[in-house]
Length: 87
Length: 206
Image (cartoon, rainbow over all chains, first blue to last red; front, side, top):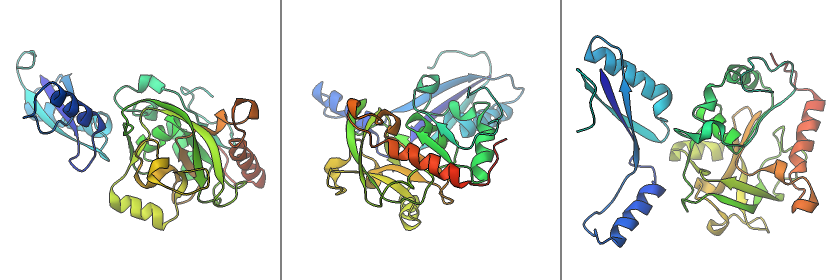
């Protein structure tokens, strides 16, 4: 089973990297892009029998290691069946 | 002492040095925080033993929850390696006891992620409890936005825990111990540590 963990900076936290990317896109002429927030994405292949179990394990991993709760929050998607590329 | 040890073997003080442990992958200090030696450091800190984290060592202390807050990328989004002025706000820690209150030290920084962040309520609490030990300042000691090299909230360059035995700082005092390399101000921190250990803190490292 594959769990996808999306880690992003909390809205209240300033994102220096996202600001630089926003500026670069504006330089490229994408004035319509108003703001960019940069985050991290993890794919966890998990040996679990149910989606709930995979979700629980991914959530534990995010709490302990993948995200820092002081500055980041995360979202998890679980997909059963063979692991595949991100759509 | 190697990070894979599990005992501090009777050390009088612990200094977590700078560096880029585990390549800073994931987040700075996020992997080193789970090094086999860390439970012993945690116990030593909780028992009141003097612990200093410098640069990456400070980041490890933050990730380990021994100090509050987290580090963001520098406001400049660049690695910054330069001498800065740091004002010593409090001298009642094992690592600042030989400084004068308000003393300005010239010591270098060398980091890409030293932009200290904590929730506003936490920062207020740090101020109220006088836990902000070092602040980026100008040579005369004035704490100004221009003196802040990385965007740290309230110009925070270093702080301590409530019990004041655990201190973390981004500047590198150990790189300022010889006039020949620009400054010897960092020696004061080493002398403070030696003095504090000599006074005896009653903690035996396990």
